[in-house]
Image 1 (cartoon, helix red, strand yellow):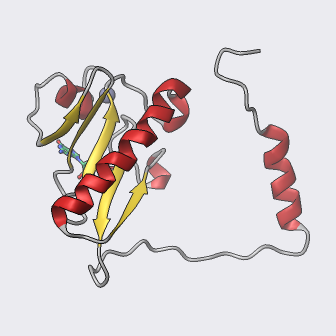
Image 2 (image 1 turned 90 degrees about the vertical axis):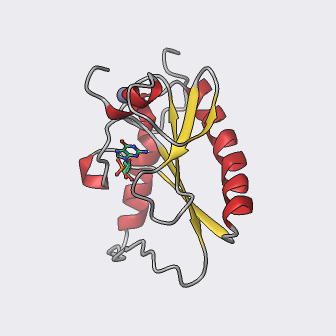
Image 3 (image 1 turned 45 degrees about the vertical axis):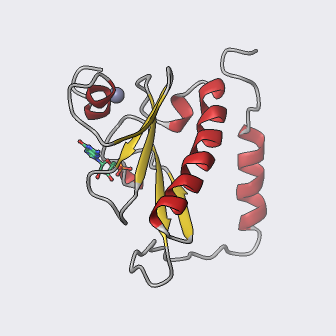
Length: 144
Ligand code: 5GP
Ligand code: ZN
C-alpha cells in the first residue's frame, strides 16, 4: 500500500533494525520502544487488522512470535514479555498495517498496561457470552 510506513519498511524504502525476514514476514525493533528490545512482527502483505489476514499467515505468525520472544529475553536479560496487538484507532492502533508487539518486561520496569475493570449486571455475562457464541464462525475465510 502506497503511504503505509510498514509497507515502506518491507520494501526497504525506510530503514529498520531487522531481527528476522522470510518470504512472508519481517520483524524489526520498534522505533519508540516500551523497553529496549521491543520488536514488531509484521506480515509482508498489507492487511490492516488481524481479522484481515489468511489463517495460514496468522498461525505461522504466532509460532514466529514465540521464537522471537525467547530470543528477545535471552538477548536483553529481561525475564518476561507482553505479546499484544492493536486493531483500530480505539484500541490504540497508530500504524494501520497489522503488527504484533513483543515487549520484554522485568519487575519494576515502570511500564503500565492500564485496565479499569468493569462489572456485569446479573445475567449479563450469559447474555454476552451467548451473543458471541452465536456469531462465532469457525470456517476458514472463503469456506462455505
Ligand atoms: P500501534 O500503536 O499501531 O500498535 O503501534 C505502532 C508502533 O509502530 C509504535 O509502537 C511505533 O513506535 C512504531 N513505529 C511507528 N513508525 C515506525 C517506524 O518508522 N519505524 C519503526 N521501527 N517503528 C515505528
Ligand atoms: Zn502496509
